[in-house]
Length: 436
Image (tube, rainbow, N blue to C red; front, side):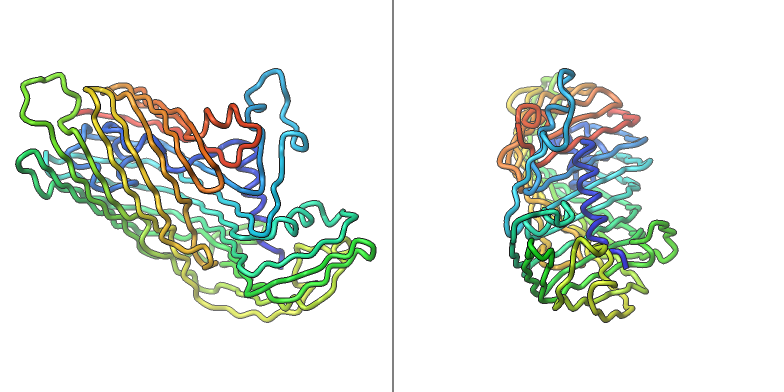
């Protein structure tokens, strides 16, 4: 069995090196004209919004991050320089490095405000999450260099987990105004989703140690490694014959403190302060006929003389076929949006992962805190999100919405000036908006 660990790393590096990267439309989701993109963040945002009808043609959001790699991404945009992998990439190996990839594609979807108090939406998406948590950076560095090293090293990996999971989903969302009195408004929303699993691979260890002796070119290891794969997900010819399925849900609430009654018809919005709370990606996908192998790593091998991806040839193992559940990346989202003037707003958003990374049969999202000032009107909005994310100290981005087109990145500006970017993202969308 070929080690799916290699596939996860390839996914991470491919996303990072090509800069096709973002995490769920950061900066855009709080726009009052974001439409259906805001519903996937909080299902209550659709009702009583500025959109009568919003038809998404195609949107995508991609994001990648790692505290192992630092990449000089600004050379990709500098016409005077060429991007050199060796010169423009730095590594920061430590005892517990992490990798993360998130790709979200929204297919044709639609949102409709039925009246002032009710809205519905039908949303279709294809999503991929990849996580590698707490891997020994020195071990990974030598693995990547095919153990072509003249120095001895030792490692311990007691909490290492890794997961890659791809699935499609169709969601039916409903939003309603729950309370509207005395300039106070409360809205609620829920999205129920059918999940079609496309495949997953995962790995973990209860304890893994090793020593590499350069003079003898030997790697002595102890401990175990558990590796599981659904169907033929780790083969070169994925047929998606053994698809999994499941159900999921998002739920959200919004409180608005509205402006006092006014005769000013030029106001773009009727609230002064808006607060939101939502929980997304509740649920899991079940996969039958999942092969799980437990490798006994108490062995000494020659890493240069063997294919280290093929664990079956290197270590004794036991395997079983069983049904597993892969949990969705459940997260809590909080936001506050304040209307400073007619068209100028500032928002604060916090995304908190509920899932613990020590479970290999789950996907987990990154914790973030973002502040976004924005200029907003019916046909045009501009955002400048800045804040903190896991693996990256501080990021500054830029995004805009111009009628049917939305494009942006929450890390564009900081990556253009940084010599060692550890995360990168981009989002783009095309839709048919019909405003109220």
